Length: 219
Length: 84
Length: 102
Image 1 (cartoon, each protein chain N blue to C red):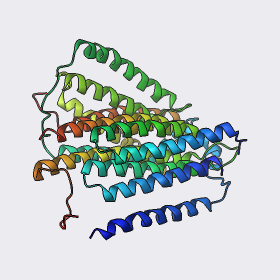
Image 2 (cartoon, chains in turn purple, red, orange):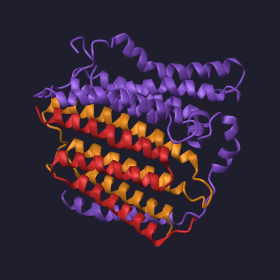
Image 3 (cartoon, each protein chain N blue to C red):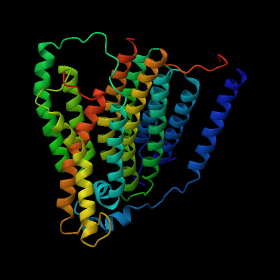
């Protein structure tokens, strides 16, 4: 059925043309939701509008997103052991020294991004990604997690983000408010608390996704 | 809309065309390793585009997750793929 | 044509490039790369169209949606790569072959 291959390119061009025409026929100036967000920004507890949308106005989406991350990790872990890499090169002294120097720096950068997310670009996901990068660097250099990383602590760290977010959600329901409607006086602190736990959780989840399988007792 | 200087417009045009070109090269490259490296570079180009579109939070997330972590995942998978 | 529409068109181009590569390529890793490029194209259209407010700051809701989308995309990529390795172990090759030998 080789003739269908020749049909693909014109179809793609037609799709591109149709989508392009649709986009270009949108109005030139469109006032979106920035006005509505700016009006409620003082009551949201943070002054960065993207963080306010992510953690307060659309907090439910962020909760579900963290559940998606955990579900993906569950899926990866459910496949069992990975096919082995043929040769594991031993890290040289330069790489080991660099990793030992860089990982604490990365943790510091993650903490800064977490704190700065309230008033500047940053936030839980960016900080969690930097933490995940630190974990990936560690795994690449040493090939395993240190024995100090107990399995129970790992599992607690993985679920802590979703648990903390759910706990806050249930608390808001119990005190008579809507789901995830923070009291305006506490909103800033609640957001920081959720973001802090979520950062650790996201970082550990991303590093575990890179590892690809459940860490066994040998590692 | 702020006044668009021709220089800024040319920069945006070149950035957009460069983005399309590097995506095409990444998808059409016969060598998988090169394709993944080009994909990581594509992620970094995207981070620049996000900055140009006044989306610094998205730029941070894209540079860390989209370029960095996805690239690491793809490289690890490629290593385990080629050794069977 | 203003900046938002330029980048929106680039996003559409990326989406179609990725879609074409997804259909044409056989190797699973290339298909995963193609899906990621498609996702990036969609995110580009979203954020570009959020920039149409003129002198006012950009609309933060699409930014939040795209950050969520980037994280979900990396989770899906990790799961897809693990599936690809499983397919390689089970069938011996990481490509999808058509039954007609196309």
